[in-house]
Amino acid sequence: MILNSCSMSPQPLSPHNFRDLFDSVEAFLFDCDGVIWKGDELIDGVPQTLDMLRAKGKKLVFVTNNSWKSRSQYADKFRSLGISVSQDEIFSSSFAAAMYLKVNNFPSQNKVYVIGGEGILEELQLAGITAFGGPDDANKTIDLKQNCFVEHDKSVGAVVVGIDPNINYYKLQYGTLCIRENPGCLFIATNRDAVGHMTALQEWPGAGCMVAAICGSTQKEPVVVGKPSTFMMEFLLKK
Amino acid sequence: MILNSCSMSPQPLSPHNFRDLFDSVEAFLFDCDGVIWKGDELIDGVPQTLDMLRAKGKKLVFVTNNSWKSRSQYADKFRSLGISVSQDEIFSSSFAAAMYLKVNNFPSQNKVYVIGGEGILEELQLAGITAFGGPDDANKTIDLKQNCFVEHDKSVGAVVVGIDPNINYYKLQYGTLCIRENPGCLFIATNRDAVGHMTALQEWPGAGCMVAAICGSTQKEPVVVGKPSTFMMEFLLKK
Image (cartoon, rainbow over all chains, first blue to last red; front, side, top):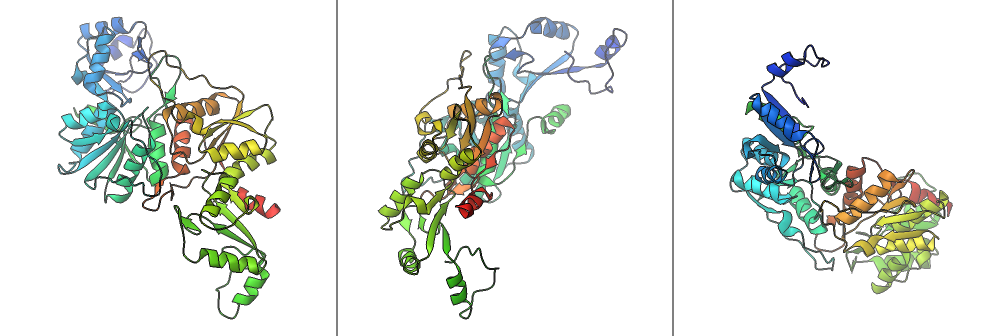
């Protein structure tokens, strides 16, 4: 269960060195999908392990590349699974996207267009950034008649793309127009995971699918804030 | 207007060599989007040029990377614009996808799943290949509850992806499952154009957008049958 040790070089765990390693580690970082839960089911042994680590005074951080939810929504998910985790212990790629814009001084007069979940919108708003799109555009349709035209907001300074099971042509066109036509508009990917584990029975196209779609229509590459980029981990270490 | 000359090496056109070049060329290949029409509007001078070439006994071929329509549907479009063009004079990437499978002896017991337009389904059916998906899956939705599951047909031996303004998560999941889980399943792109000119007022995400989405979720690269791949041109030359 020890996922990350910043202060020691990797060595095989054995009954002899386990205690030294354990004592030397202050914080434990956990992935969530497939480590804490699978879909909406808790993985065996997780509550006992977390209780033991807390009893030993270890700091816990739950890191998830999945951008669908905000930290507060992930805290609710932990709660619904019977585990008490505070928002401050959670680090999601939706939060990472907001932090990336904040540390890079995203201009307050600019807006963000979101292809992804409510969680991204929520984290951006908490960071004081005006954002729109996401679930609000889930049911927008395009009828490609001759006079069909999508008008986009020229003040959009970044398009954030994460996993979006409500992906549609309107969103693809809107994000593409912002990136292609608004000078300096950033293209930010929460992550590029090929698949996600949103249900227990099968894998589903992940943010990597929606991000690649926008790469395909814009011919541009995104800034990735989630794993395996180092932004999230570097931000965490500074924190 | 001379787009392609197979028998001569390129040289600048001048009043002196124009006649020799013109006389030596048997067939004229035209792109359609932006050359013959823009959206549903004919480009100035096209009817006169085509009439002149036909009067001189030249063979005309209309090549389009746009996979939305079949050759017969493109013939209808020419007709609606007042130009008489036969189905045999049209070479679309929807037809190219069907021809690619045919010349590669696609097994008759296998099926094709289509992310794209009716035109691809029509061309596959004309080539004797069983295909499904496309417009029939336009309104399918996914509700990611814990027991949500998309069952895919294990006999799908190829997924053909073209431009699809009705792209949705169901189609992305279905195509991804076939490519990832059916042994040997082909991933065929009609083309990878970033944008298309389906209306006169703005550009729209092209097949390159949907193809990239499937690359993102499968981590695989497609066989491309349209331009700039040489399959379409080589097939035409043999014909």
